[in-house]
Picture 1 (spheres, rainbow, N blue to C red):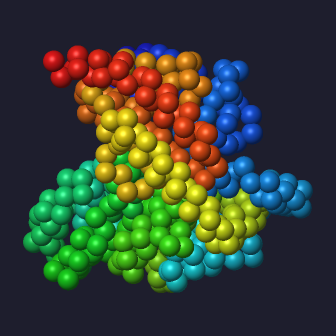
Picture 2 (cartoon, rainbow, N blue to C red):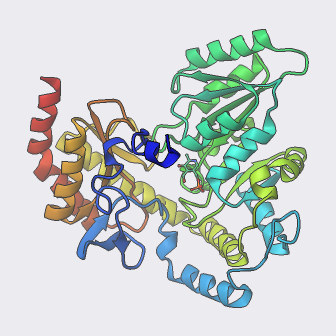
Picture 3 (tube, protein in one colour):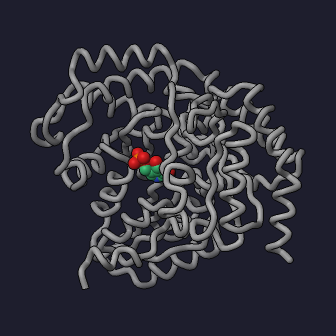
Length: 408
Ligand SMILES: Cc1ncc(COP(=O)(O)O)c(C=O)c1O
């Protein structure tokens, strides 16, 4: 059979969303300047679906830095991979600043978080090693696991007993030259709960292992200084390899891993997605440095993010929605319902209330569950929050009626 003819029957992680509703439920186009107020299909929307947590993407000073850096360096420079011709003082300075920001000794820049972390996992373990990861890990960790040569096992989401079982199982099978790498997340991006990092780290006393934490959503948003979930949970030292991306709080492309100098030195020579790929363009590196500096200088951005998060969460709870025990700005609204209900909520919110929210249904979440995810940012204001809460109040009766069809 022809390969292309077969593709139509291949399941996609998007399920029924794959082709139905292209441009509306999937691949929608938000237009106008980046921020909490954008246009969708020509209509004004209050947007709750972009991860620009600190409002950095709409900051006028930063836009100026972007323009000046692009004029100075062009978007092409430097050409080549870091290893060959793509290195610069700016790249190295950014690595030092990132390491200092997250309280680690050294860091390596990654062109994209997704490929970067996959490759880091691949580089860190070999066929003698064990890789243990949380079952709700982001797709990039799951793909990194596929690449890794190590023996793999998974523990139930944030379940310390399940983790312990896998850890002891790996320890029992271990040979002299075997090591264990544990991978989990700082903030789970769909549900907003934090990884049980202190509990995991405590078990190092029983079985030695190294811990890699994907802190995509925690970097810049959590901890008194924005240095992430480890700082928030007072266990940053127990994270052996810290991963952060620029794709959320820094509102940019690019990412990094931070660790001990000997580990970073090893990764620079072994992370294949970086060795064999063009380095980050100079304007991205220059603006990342400036953004990091501004994030450090403006703790009030993080305070505003959190006050908006609390107002939104408390308002939703008051109306009677289940927002899960999220401990981060990620605000999930959970209900029972079908894929149709998920689409209905998105459509009614957009068309009748001018509120742009995104949701997921089966197969991204279990069958019969609908999760609408709201991402508050420092750029939202009280008016945005009130308008959104009124809209959620207005659709409550409809959502409840549809949910009861599932439970009936
Ligand atoms: C938990 C998590 N890890 C990794 C990534 C990938 O990062 P990037 O967008 O920089 O490729 C994302 C999404 O951005 C994410 O949510």
